[in-house]
Amino acid sequence: MTTRKTTRSVIVIGSGIAGTTAAFRLRKAGHHVTLLEQESYPGGRMSSYEKAGEGGAYRIDRGASWLSHNYRPMIELLEETGLASRMLPCSSELGVLRDGRVHRLSFVRPTDLLRTGLLGWRSKLRALRLLRDLAAARPALSWNDMSKAAGIDIESAQEYALRRLDRPLLDHLVEPLCSTQFLAPADEVSAVGVLSIMWGTFGAASFTFDGGVGRLPTLLLGLPLMRSEQTCVELNARVNDVTRDRDGVKVTWERDGASSVERGDACVVAVPGPIAAGIVPSLTDDQRTYLTGLRYTSDVHVTFGLREATDETALGVAVPLREHPDLCVVLHEHNLGPGRAPAGHGLVSLMFRDHWSTARITLDDDTVIEDSLTAVNEVLPELAAHIGEQREMAAVQRWDRAVLARPAGGYRDLARFTSSLDPRSPIQLAGDYFAYSTTNASLATGETAAQRVAALLSAS
Image 1 (cartoon, one colour):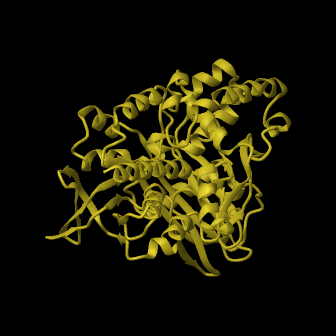
Image 2 (cartoon, one colour; image 1 turned 135 degrees about the vertical axis):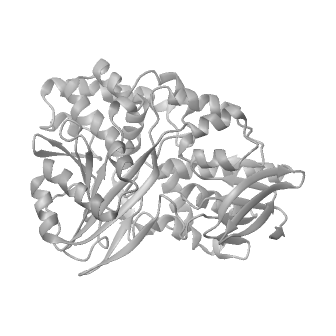
Image 3 (cartoon, helix red, strand yellow; image 1 turned 90 degrees about the horizontal axis):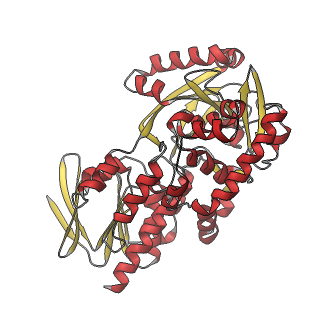
């Protein structure tokens, strides 16, 4: 076992966008940072990789695929670091399938809800209620802490839609938004979740990066400040224990069977809630119960590289539950911009609701690919035929904790949890479970955790 002691240092666990942002902020505050990442690559659920096809390389996002100009904390960080020039515009359309026809809505123009053929005129009038409710909910919505939403967390998205809207709006807007964002149907998601989706995406254009959204964590880690001797990044580092002692914080981790102890003045734990519960013994029983009880949906999705791109102009086509029980969205990722696929080629991902993915997370790739094609053929046979004729590459990805799907009452639980945390503790938590599952929310919670640690260290 090796032991290292550093002074005025901070250990950050997890190199997803929450952890990477926290590490950047702490380095900017002048502290030594050690970043421990369990995987062999940085970025976590905000990471990308390349896979070769016959015509060249495809750039595939492991988790998130697109970003919004509504993501103010992220935009401000990009502008501050000079990385805003790396942003690329992409399609800002979402298609919704109804009776075999795709109806496209623009994220930039919420008024598309009033013009679309997706909805009848009665539903369009009811949609005005949704826009009014969104405006009323805005003060309770926050990127780094959604506990203020406890006061409006009274029902599921399905209950809300049937009470305030109507059945067509539930079937063709509310449910598709829930399944696309959370991989779970509307009856399993709080109504606050739907309002959060609209708040975070509607009214603003989308963007991405040339090599995929995973470019952001790697770009941050590549900044001169982060490449100094005061930054240490350890990959393949599995953390087992984070404890406080009179000297600060002690982190026990291992790699390739060899155990190490890292000591620092403070620590930011930026991993999914259930993992944090297992490695921070100082949490109370109630805090641990909350974190272990968080529901993350599973995601097993298939990405196809195609010799010829599809004709679809939307970034994605949502498949409502009434259209298909399993398939929830088809992402036409070549519409994310140049570089995702070789010129003229296509990149399409099929994503499924949680129950489908949970049943297949341990199955072999060939079986998953075959099952995914069967599903898409049942609802979009022309797309299935195009994939069959043009396919040159297929990749299967598996996440057992992909997206936090908070049910009705979940924001009230969050408020109780956040009120129990000590903002002056040398062990600070960060992650999407403080808000809702987006890269921007994770980033914002990383900044909050770093601010608390920096304040603690400056006062001691």
